[in-house]
Image 1 (cartoon, rainbow, N blue to C red):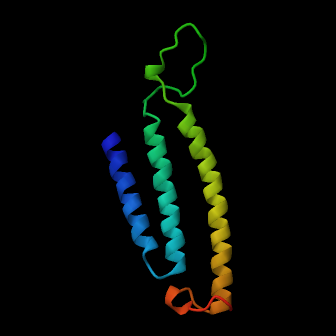
Image 2 (tube, rainbow, N blue to C red):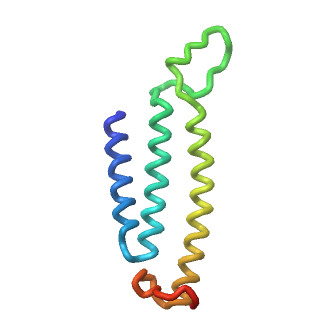
Image 3 (cartoon, rainbow, N blue to C red):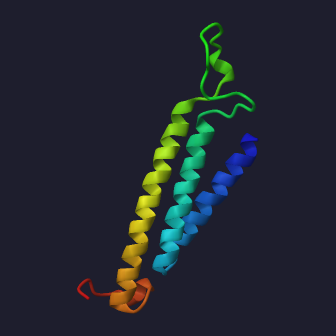
Length: 115
């Protein structure tokens, strides 16, 4: 399972970097989104994958932490998803404003900063 997740993370990072090297502003934002998803998946994988074991342990009679998942990466990922959504919403509004001002989404056409 970890090998499949590692390959998925590598593909997401590679695709995200490739998209960020394109000339279109929209592709840059899609690449940034893919990098965010790859990072979330990487943090999730670092927390440990335990099939059939909850992240929270109920009761105190037997505390065997080796067989439970770490809940901290899951909380960090949830926060990251919310922040990533806000950044993407801001980027979409920014792209719309740039396209409306410049008439193009190509980075080579955006030579001037005052439009």
